[in-house]
Image 1 (spheres, rainbow, N blue to C red):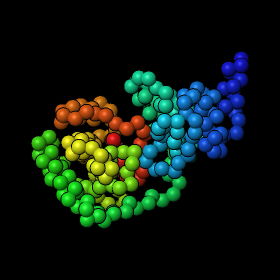
Image 2 (cartoon, rainbow, N blue to C red):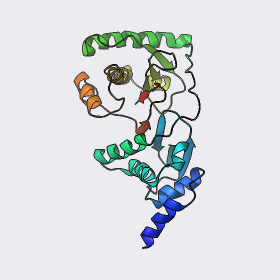
Image 3 (cartoon, helix red, strand yellow):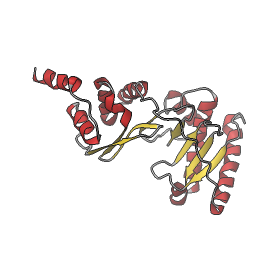
Image 4 (tube, helix red, strand yellow):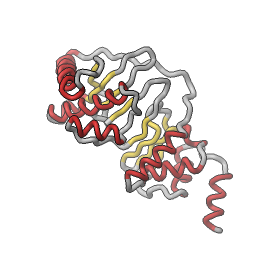
Length: 236
């Protein structure tokens, strides 16, 4: 009865209103004790992510049903791929709707010192397209980001009147060997292939099979991503 009462309180009580109150709810549902802080976001692509002791959750989940909160708890602490997939499915199915009109992505003018890097990445894209995709991938804009810190690269589908794009982190280029940068490029090209094949942008079975086919490790950053008005991003 004690456990049932605690669960009843969670269902009928006032919904959490900030990160601290949401963290208390998630802890009551069994959230990993190593999570010390919950930050609410309005990010339109990443729904749930966690790094170290910090959990970042879209603020729209404050009013979600308790079983969705349990899925967030499971996503943070899952030990198996199946458990993670089950949690992801619930989280994505209940993703909050966008509250405002979508913002138009800005196309940043590349710095002069990045122009050579972009040219080399574009050349590698052409070569990999011929070698691994039979030249079937569409031409794509390639950018180098100096603001991308937690991700190595990102593929963004066309949206808001803009074309699709592959972005590579400038810090990744600075820190890692060029072979690792090309590995990241090829990873994002597999996401491009997913999009052009009409497949879901994720790191599921289709992605893993294609990644192994082109000779890369199908690793991924641990985050949940979501489409908003055609603007979809997949990251590593």
